[in-house]
Length: 74
Image (cartoon, rainbow, N blue to C red; front, side, top):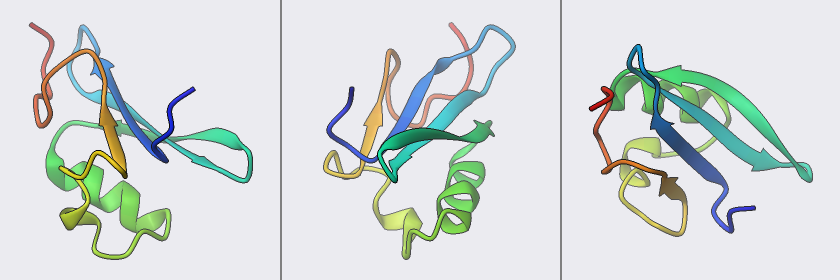
């Protein structure tokens, strides 16, 4: 389990990355993001204020199995 509340998972074969948030003691899938803008929209909908400013903060977001801001599979 991650210690950060938001996890951006590895890119899928078809592109995009699943986004989950840990709250209320469980992980909730927010959706599949295909860009930073998608990610910001998901985070704002989840109630995270100033979402664009937390994307590079490792206390908030863990980018798994690929560099941050990379949205397509290799």
